[in-house]
Image 1 (cartoon, rainbow, N blue to C red):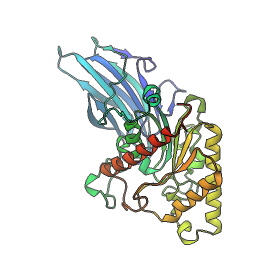
Image 2: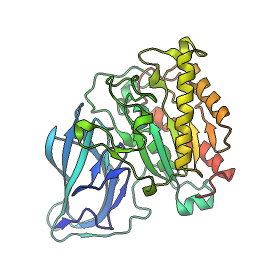
Image 3: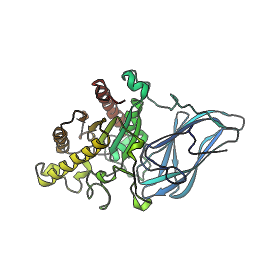
Length: 368
C-alpha cells in the first residue's frame, strides 16, 4: 500500500522543499519519522548528486542503518523487511546524512498491504540519550527549537572516522559523514529539541573564500535560502514563518582563514575589520528575523587561530544584546587538526547542552 507523503501521521523536520510533487531534503539532519504496524516498508528516493558518494541514514527500531544512493535517478531503500506472518510495530527515522553535496527527493513510501500507520510518535523516536530531568519544566513540556548556521563540523562531516580522533582526516568519498553524530544534533537530542541544521562543509561567512569553489556562496548569502545550488535546480528563498527557533547557533568563521589567514596575520587590519563588520551585520539580520531568540556565537574545537574567537567576542560586545552570547568550548580551536569524530562531538554536545540549560535558567528563553 502506498502512503501519501503528506499524511499527517508522518513527522518531518528541517528546511524541506514542498513546492513540487514530493518533498526534497537539502540540508543535513533533515528527517522523516513514522511508526507503523506491519512487516515491510520501502522508501524510494531520487538523488541529485554534486560530489562525493552519497548516503542516506535511518534509525529503524533503535538500530542505525546506512544506504548508498545511486549517483542519479531512483534508489529503492528497504527500511523494514520481515518474514510473512511476522507483522509487528516498527519505528523509523529516515534522515539526510550529508550536506548539500546532494539533494534527495522522496518519491514514494510503500508499506506491506496489511500495514497501518500508528500515528502517535510522542516519546518513541529513538535516542541513545535518556530523558533529561535537569531541564526546566516549561522546556520539557513544550520542547525547544534550535537552528544552526554552521560548516562541516555542524554537518557531521567525516564524523564516523573514529579511528582518526584527534588526527587529520583519512581519505574518503563521503562515507564517513553523518549528521546524526554532529555535535549540534547530539545537543538537540540531549535537550529533546527540534533542529534545523543549515550547515555546509567548507563554507565561510563571506563569499569568495573558504574550502569551496571560488564562486560558491558564503553563509551570508545562503542563510535565507531553501535551495541554493543552481546546478541542482531553482534557487529558492526560505519562508521564515515556517519555523521560529528559541536558540540560534552561529558556528561559522574559521573557514574564512583560507586561502589567507588574515585574522591571524593582521588582526587589526582592513580585512579583519571588514570581516567583523560583515559578521555583525549577519547577526543583526538573524535578530531581525528572530527578535526573541537567544543567539549563540561560536566556533568549534577544530584547530584554528585564537584571533578568530577574539574577533567574535569583540562583535558580541559591540552588539550589546543580552540575548547574544559568545560561547567557547573548553578546548576551543585546539583539540584536533581534522574533523570532529563521534567521541569529540559527544563531549562538545555535553558542554553546549549544559550552557543552554543555564541560559534557560536565566529566563532568557521567554517564548519557549
